[in-house]
Length: 157
Image (cartoon, rainbow, N blue to C red; front, side, top):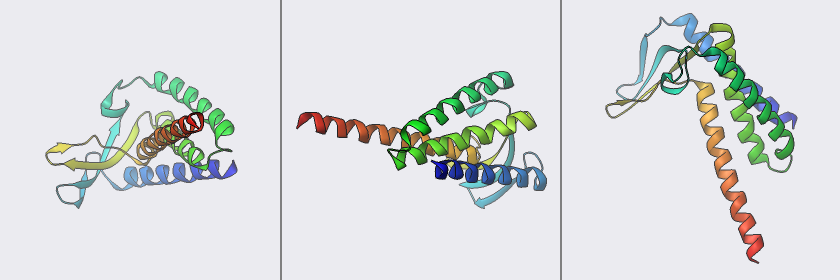
């Protein structure tokens, strides 16, 4: 169990360190091309969720995040022992939720900086915590799909 909390802590540390570097080294809206036309480091702030949804609703995010973190810790304690895959997935979701919570709590906004263009579409700017959340949720969906298939195989035999 400890290893999953260690993983979450490492991701939170990387998330907060990268955000601190962006805040210290870049002006707001400054953009540095990494791969011209595709990937940029862009200093951006967001007071809402993805795509700026619910901008400025900090109390809502505080409450939701605390509830989500509680559920994740509960599920980690219940299911991570039986499945390393699920443990890693839940650790990533936990890290993402806490990483952005720290920003909202102390900065009253989330620092975003990973800026991707897909053709002419500029994907919403995101950060390490967002990436951790997305990867964790995808892994949880994969784990649920695999688990369901295994249950069906066992019952069909």
